[in-house]
Image (cartoon, rainbow, N blue to C red; front, side):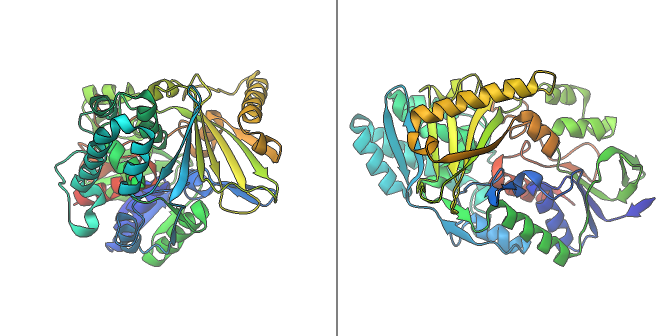
Length: 460
């Protein structure tokens, strides 16, 4: 059976759903193909004992009125309600080598004052650095589309790196760690991520930090409603096996032999998966070889629990830093943690550590290794946060293998946005065939939106 569409999007993550909505709202007859049983499974999260756990969305910047988020939500017809997180303490950073605890505060002026009080010898450099982050954000057209600002010729993953800028401004290893731990949000270490990329994804939080009412489930529901209103068709349990050409049409053949024909095909999948299903002539051989050699971001090992009704943490997130050189955390061989607390009662707690992306392959010793690692994390939490350990019921854990089974690709953000490596572009050598997703332009929730908007600009 072959179904005909103007446009077909392969993959129903946020980037794929955004591309599908943009196409459908152009008047294109659009289909979305998703291998899994739900749209954007990572964004959706899961529920245990009546408590919901977020796995794809925790917080974001640029969601204030007049900002990039509300602009794109309106453009896509998404009914989403951002809410501000507490201005002080949306992130708490614990530097274990020195014992320093620093709570991030929203507002560039307030943050500058607080950092300068903590590091008085660096106060002049702090002011210069924050000015530089604000200038990088203002220069990016990708997150200034709502007002026509920025320069679209400015590539957000061009040099210098975040580490180079930090080293040029500061002497204190503690201060560098505080300002670079948010690299956790995009999965690329400071020595590899471009300064501009980091600013666009992470430094908007210096202005304001936001949640979305209902979290990832609400985001998925809003996309479902908008896609239905736009007339797009969604096909779940529909894994693409091959993309071929017949004249100007792209033919997507599924694993169950169903076929979809279209003029425009947007693949919102991991680039290495795309290379497996795309026609051989999609890229030059040298470019394909370079893509195959690109490094993955670290994977996530997560431990999930729920606090009793009497315990509530106002802090949204805690970073536990075991090495002041944040680059070493990305080797995945130490136990630094990102701990997220939900805004609900009882409060869900997710304790996440970075591990190598190809680790945790399922095999005879998998469950025993997993159980042993869980016990190590529990002991760390008991030592570091007795108020958590004494009031938490642990409900489960996940590894990169869990994420691969759940989402169909490696257990992290995708390919690392290494400023010194090959750039992945949305255009291919085949007219009408495009690539999108977190590995292409920018990672994370806002990165997925940005990438799909860029793809939309180049589609004829």
